[in-house]
Structure formats: structure tokens, C-alpha cells
Amino acid sequence: MIPNFYFLRGFVRVIYGTTSILICLYKQWLVGFVGLLREVFYLLHGTKKSARCRAD
Image (tube, rainbow, N blue to C red; front, top):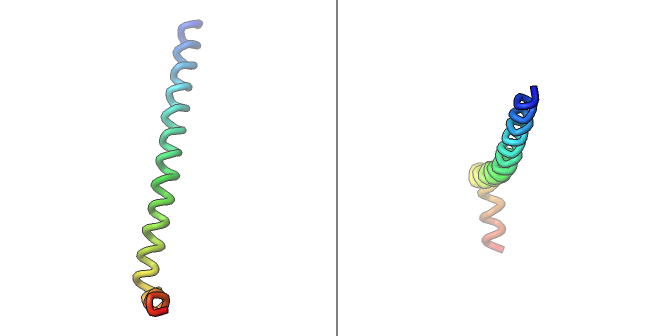
């Protein structure tokens, strides 16, 4: 019973560490993806606005 408990604790620790790393990477990827979507949106729909800003 005791080795199973230690194995479970180590397993939970490994899963928690990988999950936190994945969440951090996912947040960075999500921020980058939102920025990319924003750039594409401005390229597709905001060309007049960006041209006007560039002219100003």
C-alpha cells in the first residue's frame, strides 16, 4: 500500500508539473494566436483605417 501511495504522489506531481507547463505554453500560444487573428482581421477589414492612419 505504501509504495502505491508514493507512486501515486509522484504521478500526481509529474502530471501537475506537465499540466502547468502546458497551460503556460497554451496561454502564450493563445495570446499569439489572438494577435495573429487581430492582424488578419485588420488586414481584411481595417485596410481603410490603417491606410487613413498611415496617411495621417
